[in-house]
Length: 243
Image 1: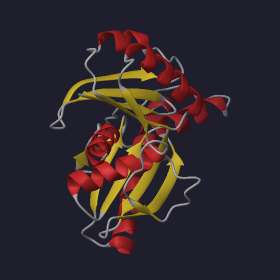
Image 2: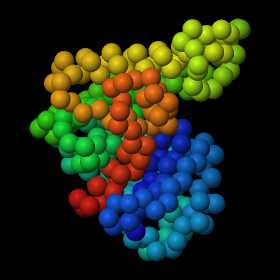
Image 3: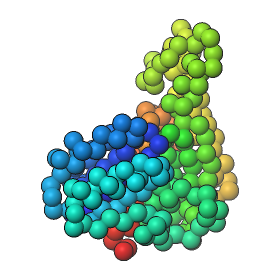
């Protein structure tokens, strides 16, 4: 059994994955709380390997410490340090997030090439892998939650709100106007950028979306038909198979 862990800026995602790639259990916890021990207590002791991808160095150190106490004889592999993602990359090696490479590797392995990955995380990222299997790079936009928080923090009269589906395109009050702006605004951005990627890469490029807000935004975005919320964790499974 593989324990896959993705440490993001907002959340830590964990999954227990069997040899055939099926996810047996999955857990999520806020990164800033680092409340892993209740989750680790639920896990069976027979974990053969642990693969971690992280964009938060301090949290990575703390997570590894907790894991070593729970799984004393289990090897821990950190993507980028102990194992490399087998993708040729044109991106600046000192700046690329290993999570983006791992997710791109999963998308390539599962859905074929060329492929565009849209990840709705703390930031919204667009990553593209060419038909020859080369990671070309991508785009980075502010995440939806970040944008919502910025509106309320940097204005005197706009309220805090959370994202949810809206019945009307034109908002009838401030809250519904913000929600419509976020949903239709980000869906329009996604549609426009997918069209640009198709011009640059080819009309046959596949599109897969992941991240917490992907299911909601995809309802308003015709080009986002394929959703895979476990893409980063599946990337760790495929890296385990390579190793």
